[in-house]
Image 1 (tube, rainbow, N blue to C red):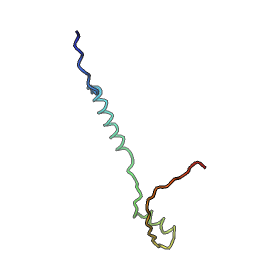
Image 2 (image 1 turned 90 degrees about the vertical axis):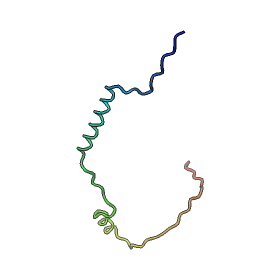
Image 3 (image 1 turned 180 degrees about the vertical axis):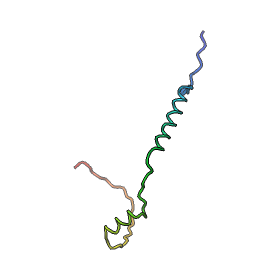
Image 4 (image 1 turned 60 degrees about the horizontal axis):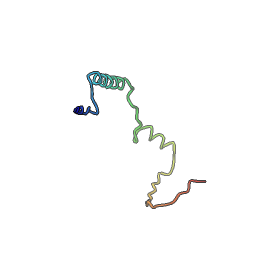
Length: 77
């Protein structure tokens, strides 16, 4: 009888594969560093404050309490 061969590992990383993954990771970091810095709008920034002033309103704050409850919704209309 022939002995059964040893099971192959599920994931075998060769030197060529390791180099490929390494080069891909370095290229990703290099390309990401070339991107312009993010220009996020902050919630308390001047842009938001200006939009709130232009929007107008009374400034009154309304508080509501919501309670979740099961329901049946028919979307076949």
